[in-house]
Image 1 (cartoon, rainbow, N blue to C red):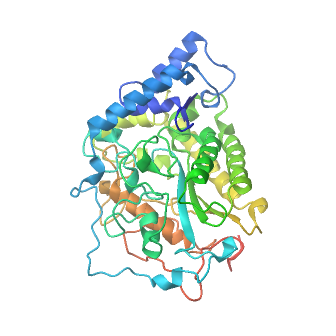
Image 2: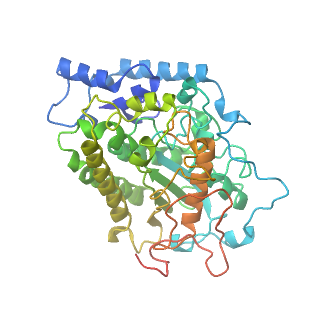
Image 3: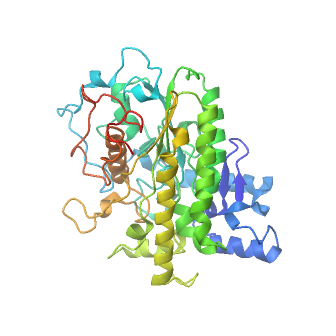
Length: 436
């Protein structure tokens, strides 16, 4: 079930209606079934329905614009437990910036330094990459997409207040382009090269890749053939949370994801020169939605945000949750296998690296059994603080060789990695001393 945005040609799934707070995905599915629209032999995420007609898209855009306006600019808040502790001005940036810059732009992806070599940054994904509700303090704030705070693609303010991957890279290269710089929807200029869409699923990423390539190619700031580009892909939360229990054959989801991820990476390899791709798995759904001592608001919201796991609508049980957890494990294995596949090795202008920082993410941080300050108001998405932890973890993975990469996040500036004289380059499977 896909929604196409007329101005940006994005594709979305019906789960996006869930973000409007009042329309349950289940109701949408029931309407589709009742009206006999669509192919009942095809999974709901793999087909078009009446939601794809122009009038529905226009209505959805109107509703999103309305909620964006009602929520207001939440991403500019400067106080609250959801924020990271600012890094004082007297504390210097921990890395020798000169080691992150090449004397001349390298011709090989295996000689990339994190500084001036990376000129363009982009991302694809779902609401985690859109940083939905990162600064939320109440229900209506969850409607806001705080994209400027997003872990892999947000560039609002600087590394001292918003320690995301782009803000770290900006210390090395202030000329970096593509990062989101404020609260925005996909059709707003502020979103830049953040192609993430709330409710997106694996099925959507090939289309996101095409839209992203077109957007970057048309940007006058980008030297298409010469500039090195970094893309981060993180998808799957909605597949595992909301759709897996509606599939006719749920165990086929990892196989389908393999085909879609391969199609996406092949398209980027063949159509966007000088590209370094990070593949990141979304954190374990079980660890997030099954947290103990969740506030009542979180318990209630999880019925809608992760309906395959929480509630009784789909006969949820310990056995069914264990089944979905196994499928997510297989889904994650597919992402690693695809990123490590031979067809993406030995290329001069293209590399894919699986970055595993999310595999063992824990909420047991900062001396607390569950540090809810890392999570948004709904205890599902990441807060601004959580996005900072995630952005730093991704940065560390870039400078860690395959086989020795960190598998979780850490408090800010704890074990912060830097390029060195001995290891100045971003690690790929071809330049690593530890072969995958």
